[in-house]
Image (cartoon, rainbow, N blue to C red; front, top):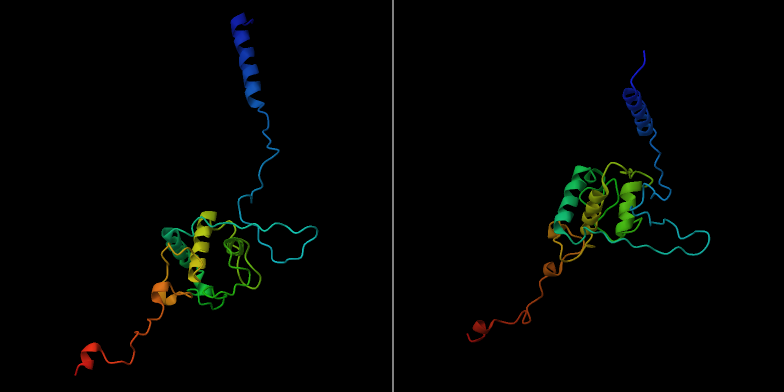
Amino acid sequence: MRLPGSILTGLCAMVVALALASCEREQRQFRAAPPAAGRAHAVTLSELQPGAQAPIIHVKNPYEESAYAISEGKRLYEWFNCVGCHFHGGGGIGPALMDDQWIYGSAPENIFATIVEGRPNGMPSFRGKIPDAQIWQIVAYVRSMSGLVAKGAAPARSDHMNAKPPEQSKQAEQPKHAGEPKPSEQSQ
């Protein structure tokens, strides 16, 4: 049995089309960014290194000037149970976060790296468990506990718990005429 020419041509065209569709060329990106690109890995734990001194890279936390982001950082701090070790900043099992003595530094990139990478002797790594944006919010809250955030952002803690009290909460000044009788008492 012979097939008419138009059917044979149509079948050949379908076979060629199917063959071309199934032979998709592999896409390769030769200059792809590494998976960790964009993360703050500029933290060095030691000044010792071979060769010339590496430039110090400072990272600005985009959330430090936002009261909302700091309050979200507080919520996440409690949600991810940072309170379990660091309590509410006063320390406990983990180091205190309200003072000015930080083992790995108080710069935003140092705190970010500590949360992502973890540290020896107890600090777990949260790599892949917390999105970067939420880590930056936690970093903003942690820095707010020791008074290291912008003054315009409302603190996420009660003023009596801040390590560095704001200017309004300084001790009340003694009156200028302390110990002297009031003008109404002098005339008697």
